[in-house]
Length: 267
Image 1 (tube, one colour):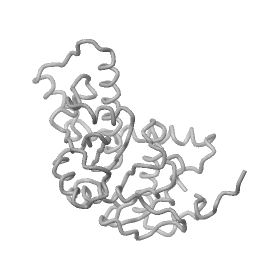
Image 2 (cartoon, one colour):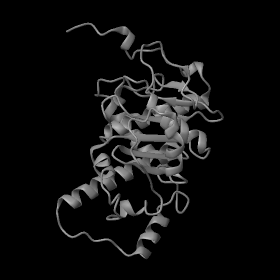
Image 3 (cartoon, helix red, strand yellow):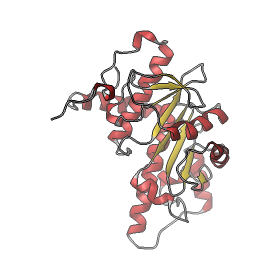
Image 4 (cartoon, helix red, strand yellow):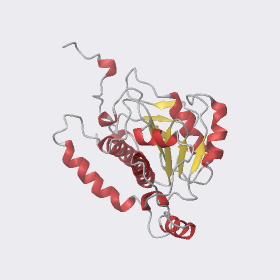
């Protein structure tokens, strides 16, 4: 077996004592989110990205372009500004994915209420992104998105800065966006809420693909029921979804980390 090039390794000294407590906690939360996306099957090799704003700053944390999500740790995250300038990263040849700051930087810049942005290329998400009908309100999980979901038309790989305005406009005030012929995007006031929204959106897409594959007549509730259900699942109606669930998911990560062979996310 050939020797692994150290310039592309993952063994970097911990940053814990070199950054503020607020930044370290943000790093822990974001690294955990990356690991959870891997656990729930929402990864695409080394591609895609999740960003989190460091509290009290305009700086963002993002993954290095070259790591699997199951390799990402709190220390391995790069710090950038909303224009994609790298302010700090580990000593490595890895950089960042241009699409990460083109898409994410635009949303963070336009939406001060947004702390975190997730973008995925899952099989079910990509499938629904190709459907003219869009996301259908077939299940309770999907109904939370009725009136709270944007659509953005495909313009090619997102590397053109001029597309930023259209992405922001198509997202509007929502926390979820289907990027047509591309994938899914969610955002939120916290990483916990943004992850929960992505989990639910992904589940909704999976259910739609399965239901449509059954090739039978589909049942959609009345407009009144859809509106009521969507309202009840908004973050401010009953509770901020994702926060209560987060601690249970961290316990799962900690338990599974012991035999994974990968470094724990909290270093």
